[in-house]
Image (cartoon, rainbow, N blue to C red; front, side):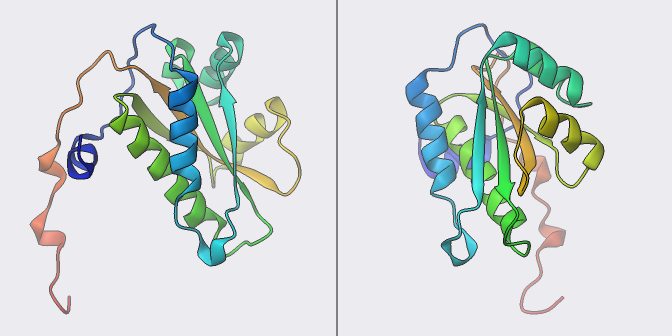
Amino acid sequence: MDALETLFTRRSIRKYTDQPVADADVQTMLKAAMLAPSANNKQPWQFIVVRKPEHLKAVAEMHPYGKMAAQAPLAIIVCGEVADPEYWIQDCAAATENLMLAARALGIGSVWCGLHPREERKIPFKEYFKIPEGVEPFALIVLGHPAQPFNEADKRVQPAKIHQEQW
């Protein structure tokens, strides 16, 4: 699959088969995440890989839009070291997108469930996963082999939102 097909067919996938995600695929997705651009090359990201069914069920209960995690084989929590308050959010967003694009290239479905900046979402994750001070949970990515198709959503492309030279 080429890069443009990966980009054009990446969708939020919320239904998964029972097939586990291979360790090699997890490592590939994490490598892609860590190769994301980063302001001043600070690389403030940290990742929690969640595979145990009891932890995935807990995740599904903690996040109001993460119910699919209870049936998923994998979730990755993207966290950011907040020592550089100016850019950790952008850096973690880039890492999250890279991770999800790598998942799509591997034929793995993913959905981004936001944590930051919602304190009521972050606090349970901080407590349950024992996230240390100075690190903030940024995003919950639920992953698995899709039980629904990847479709291109060209309806989202809106030429009226493109401006040439000036607004």
